[in-house]
Image (cartoon, rainbow, N blue to C red; front, side, top):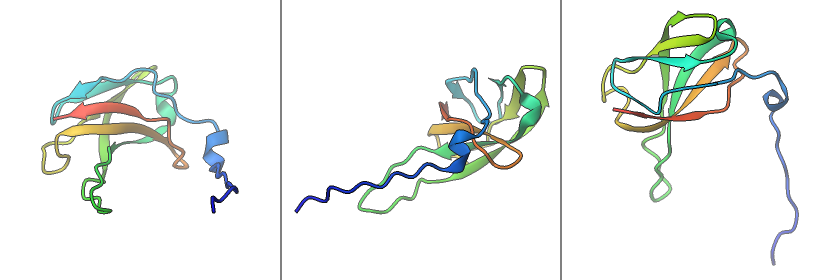
Length: 114
C-alpha cells in the first residue's frame, strides 16, 4: 500500500530576511583569503563551510562544519580565511554559508577547497 499523505516542514528562518551571497569564488586553496560579495557584510556574524555529503552503507563520515575566520569587510564584501590544511577540511566540495546574528543562514554556494 502506497502512503498518500505528505507533511511539509518550512523552518521559520526561510521567511525571514536572510544574508545573501552575491558572489563567491568557485575554488580556493588552504590558508587563502577569499572575498565573498554580500550586500550587508556588517550583519554577518559567521561564515561556515559544510562538507557535501558522501554516504555509504548508511554511514556518513565526511559530514563536517568548518567555521571560517572573517579577516576583513568593506561596504560590499567579506574577506574570510579558508581552513589551514586538509586535516581540518579534506579536499573537495563544500557549501559556503553566511550566518547572521540569530543564526539565520544564507542559501549555500558550492566552493571546492584544496
